[in-house]
Amino acid sequence: MLLLRCHLKQALPQKVSCRFCAVMGKLQSKFKHSTYKYSRPDGFIEERSQTKALQEYSPAHVDTVSVVAALNSDVCVSGGKDKIACIYKSSQVFSASRDKMVLMWDLHSSSQPRQQFSGHTMVVTGLTVSPDSSQLCTGSRDNSLLLWDVGTGQCAESASVSRNLVTHLCWVPQEPYILQTSEDKTIRLWDSRGLQVAHTFPAQQHIQTYCEVSEDGHKCVSCSSGFGGEGCEATLWDLRQTRNRICEYRGHFQTVASCIFLPRALASMPAIATSSHDCKVKIWNQDTGACLFTLSLDGSGPLTSLAVADTISLLCASFSRGIHLLRVDHSQGLGLREVVAF
Image (cartoon, rainbow, N blue to C red):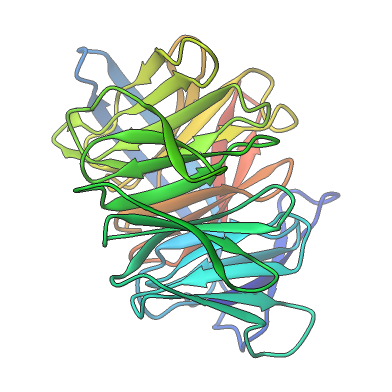
């Protein structure tokens, strides 16, 4: 797990300087030109051309970056083969890895973990923190969810569902509910009061890889694995009474690894962003499912994680080129451009 500190210059949007806690690699300024053309499964042909000035550093990680999250507008945390969860505008970070352990770190104190959570029998593949930071929920390939008291490190509740290989967890804002995706192609909503399944959404055709809940807690979005355009979609769900499927977002050609709601401060309309193993980040109209913009990160390898950095930027993690800082561009509607890779 790496802590990265990035200073985003609001007054000079063309320039971004990044300072890392470790020694940074050599900065290279590059101009890249990319033209790509592809067809969606519905027959729609989309063609984009972009020219961009890019500041590129040696990758912060020597291996695949599997997850990235923002602590605030200056600091982000990234994990190689880890899973991480953090609380925005807080110093608390939780990390999970293949050693079956979950650790809690305080970035303002010592370099040693403040708390550890041990109880899973297989690799931990999901973790999320309650809005008040008092509880931690973890999920694993051992088919179980565990609910922890953050202060004591003790397991308060446990639950297990057959074949429930957890892929991601997300706490519903201001609610005692936890959303979970699984390799059994199912999305479950858990009630943390007793850790019981409150609702199971209709099973999908492919493995569900990731989920996120809107800031108001009314909707959630999940995404799926796939190949050649089969699967590879994101799906919007109602978390309120009906809990129906609202919209689907189709256009990626490989597994969609991450999906996020864009804040209103960043997008002028309700919008969703997705990143995929096809090296593309897409922005979608949340209500209609129309693809508003596609950014191709050539040479990045599969894109693994997407996070909001601040009111003008996104962070994107990749297999081959570390972490990408993407700037929202309103010059021609709602778009993105890559400004830094590190």
